Image 1 (cartoon, rainbow, N blue to C red):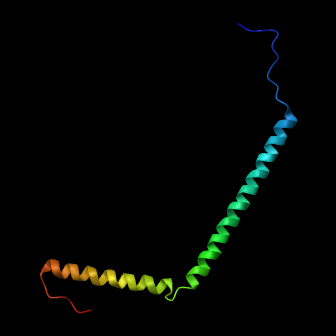
Image 2 (cartoon, helix red, strand yellow; image 1 turned 30 degrees about the vertical axis):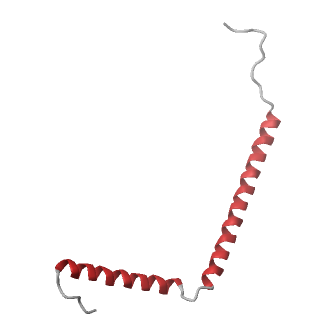
Image 3 (cartoon, one colour; image 1 turned 90 degrees about the horizontal axis):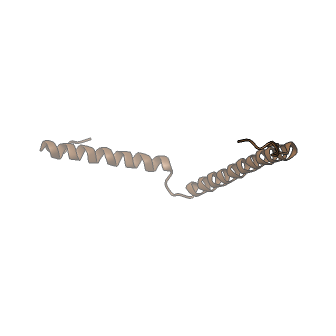
Length: 86
């Protein structure tokens, strides 16, 4: 059942090209905006960490040592032995 009076589907080529161009430009603007936000957050985070009294590496080392001591204490308690001397 075809209609011989209907026009074929023919989109405007200039409008399609303009839409594709605007989409590409918009994607670039979004990427630039996201990069700017990320950079701003990274700089602010770095400044914030620099205000800490204790550097992050020292905090991490302290926490690791605490975990090791707690692990050894748990192992000693499980074995029923006297605490080990490190």
